[in-house]
Length: 230
Length: 193
Image (cartoon, rainbow over all chains, first blue to last red; front, side, top):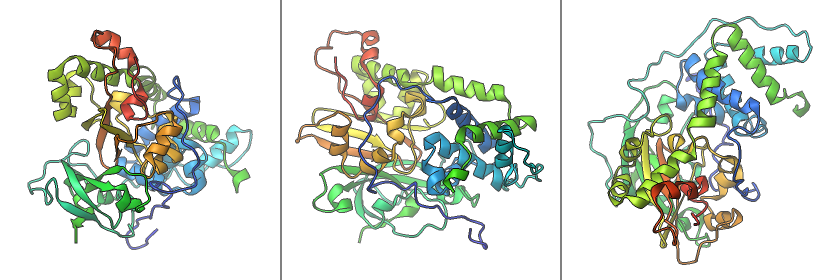
C-alpha cells in the first residue's frame, strides 16, 4: 500500500488479455448449473451484501479482487475470488478484524482459536451521486466516431479498467458510449469523475504483431485513457 | 503456505456465520438473491429477445438501435444491464464477447456467466486468437468471415443477436425460443435448427 494515498496496487493477475500459458479453452457444457457447489451460491450473495455493508461500490469490489495474490485469485475459481474480494472490503472498512474468518473456520473444524472482537467500523466517506455507473455530463465528447486515438501507457497506482494489452496502441473510435463514472477514482472514493467512454477498435496486427490471427478488437475506454493518435 | 489455506467452503461458512451472528446479514436475504439467479434470471430471457427480433422486424430495428430500451420492453433490466449494446451476427461478420479484466456479462439477459466464460484460457486468448479459441470450443468459422471481439471493459454490456438458422422461416416466436442457446448469445456458437 502507498502510505501517502492509502491506495493498494493491483497484483496484475486479473489483467489476462493476451497473456499466455492458460491452456485450451474449455468446451461448454450444455446443462451447467448456475452454482456448481452450494458454497459458491453463498459466496455470491455474501459478496453482494458485503459491498453494501462496507459502504463501498462495484469498482472498489473489483479492485478488492484485483489486489488478490495468485492463489486467492485463481485456486478457488470465480466465486472463490468473490469471497476473498468481499473479505478485503470488510477488512478495509473494519467490519471484521484480520484473522477473524480464519479463527472461526478453525473453530468450525473443532479448534479452540480465540476470535478477535468486532472492530470499530471505518467505512469510507463516500456516497454515490446516483445509482449505477451512467452519468450525464455537460461536456461534449472529445473524440468522434472515426477518430484515431491512442491508449495511454502508464503504471496504474491503483484500480483501472485500461487493459495492458491495449496500452500504447492506436485504434479507431467506433462507438461513443454514454458517460460513466471513472473506475480509477471511484474505486478509491476519490470522486466519480464522470466522462465519456469510447469503444475503440484495434486491429490484431496493431496489438499482437503482423503474424497475429486477423481480427478486430473492440475495447471500451474511458476518455482519460485516451489521447489523440500521433 | 498451500497446506495452511483454509478450505473455501469453510471460509464461506465462517464468514456467513460471523455476519449473521452480528445481525449484519440475513441468511434469508442471501437465499433470495441466490434463488433469483438460479430460477428467474437466466438465458431464457435473452432467448426471448432473440426470437422476438427474428420474427418482428420493427423490434429488431429498435433492438439494434437502442438495446437497453428494447430489452426493457420485454421486462429485462437490472444489475449488469445498465447499458446494453446488441451485436448482430451475419454470414459476413461474427461477433464474440469476452471480459479480459474480470467476467462482466449481461446478467438480466443471460443470468450469471458459465464457467467457460470465467476461465483464464477464454479471458486471455479470446482477444489474441479468437478463431483458434472458437474452434477449440466447437465453432469453426469460414476464412472469409470477419471476426469482431468485444472486451467488456466498461459498464456497457454486449449481447449477440445470432443469425436465424435456415429452415426455421415458418416457425413462430415460441418455437424459436428453445433453439436459442446461451453460447450463441455470447458468440461462441451458432443457432442450429
